[in-house]
Length: 197
Image (cartoon, rainbow, N blue to C red; front, side, top):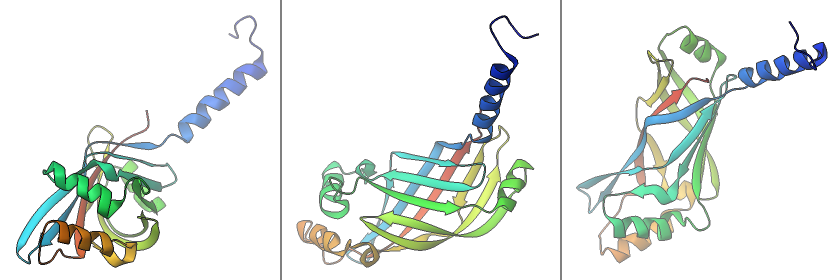
């Protein structure tokens, strides 16, 4: 029964807007999620760093976008974090890095069917003012509560000179009086997305 004051047209319009919002709802990045990378200095000393603030979505059509707050770098040494923010990432000018990709429809369907997918996916990384194509080898695993976890199966190698980061690395090297800091770093990630509500 249509309530007084409600016309059939308004009811249909409201229902259409509701269905449209549901259809366009995105999967939202949630915890636990992490992006980590490993640096090597003086040849043999390896250290793991992470970013504490991430956000992202995957649309029902497979459009994925992840944003990494570069000021949230966490190397477990505050003064080093400040130096990386200022001299390497230059966060006053470049606040975030973004990864964008188009997830194949077949993978989206597999997720909805509760199936695990192993895919190789092209993506675009925007970092420090540069856009570069990267290749991701991914494991996509549906969870029991409707979430989906996307993990890197092998490290993504990021070359400093592709993103004009070499100058910053050498500045950090001079400040810390190190013989060398590697200019190619492996990046790993595990990303959890909650299903649209």
